[in-house]
Image (cartoon, rainbow, N blue to C red; front, side, top):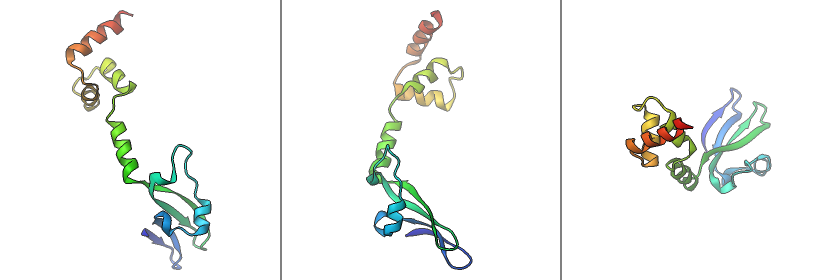
Length: 120
């Protein structure tokens, strides 16, 4: 258990626990988003009120494998990158340069694509 917070009366009100540390009541109250699985999370945030009643539990941090998967996906080009290089007027912006790098295109290729788009 890490990152704990206690009320003035000494009652635990907030904690971050891994799955093995969760009580049966906490495991029962845990709701995992439909798009993810239990193994996608490293730990969970548990909240209690000052009377010791469970308020809620939710995923806190992604596991290392899920974090690596998210990072890998962030490096792949997508539609937003294409729109960024076609329609962004500031060629020196960080977003434009990052999109251009992910797409692996040259200035000449971008200018040719802009000509095609502008003709329509």
